[in-house]
Image 1 (tube, rainbow, N blue to C red):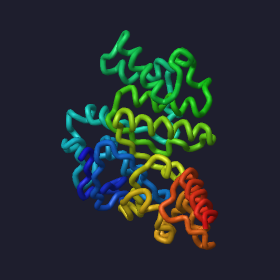
Image 2: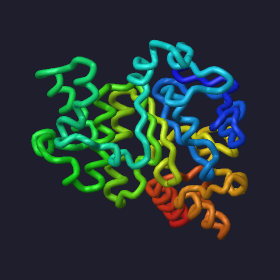
Image 3: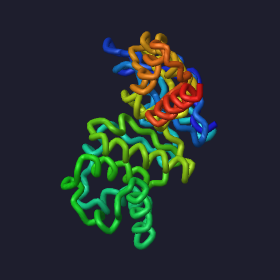
Image 4: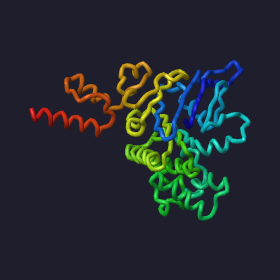
Length: 287
């Protein structure tokens, strides 16, 4: 158990006429090394939920534990918790403020006393972890980079703190297909090579089909579904109730099934679909 929420409620504008209950009785466990997608309609509580993971928001009722440590408002350990859980907001490039890529990525480590060669090594590792060449980019002004490069610099600035978990809110929003592919590939590599726990909030089911192993469906501040990615995305009718469409490849596979072309269930990616079709054609040819 790494992140644990127990009977968590959260309200905005509490004890005012404008009070809105955003989370209702959430109980949830995230284990180390998991890759999780969080999905649901706009306004269902996804962003509110993930801000509890590193104590940007404190539950109005219930408990949040990070690595066994209970989050409390006046805890002196909040800084340590936020180092363990790196949170990257939607359009993180809007938060960039330094004049060079090096200073942007090195801002966090420098503030905790890292300097000199150790700082340079940390910045280099973070940039290369998101697929950016240190020598080529570290002296550049981040505002002169492409949208995809800026997004990766912003993620690198969180990675430079070497968090044990990376929580990302719409990490590929607004990127072109190549930019999306690079971001997802690098996130997947981080998990595989460093054991980084990944939690991604996304409206792109295609992205999550590539990277997530578990899906949590939020619904009006509660958890509607929580299961493996294949099981969740195979429930087309149930997902409709939550206003969600399965990944494009899954829908194509379902249409083929409806037309009598039986290629099996649980297909997530284009590669899986092409392999199943090829197998089906080869079997038919032998008969």
